[in-house]
Image (cartoon, rainbow, N blue to C red; front, top):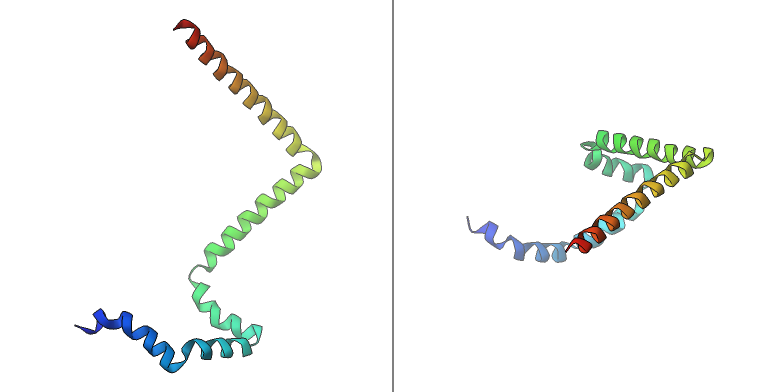
Length: 103
């Protein structure tokens, strides 16, 4: 019962006494990239499908942006958005000045 209350004190002591940080660092530096990947893979295995789907979506989106830039479609879209924004801003300012004139 009392041990969990003292774990915060034990962790730094055990790490220092056993030299865990130094041992882990030196052993991991000696690993080949394939062995290092085998150590990390179980950590990410649970989220692997999510990472693959997110990567696919981001790649698809980047491809669309690149295609839009190459074909000029992106410039047309930005131009249309600018026109819509300008119309919206002019409506907002005209309605706010009309409201100010009425008061």
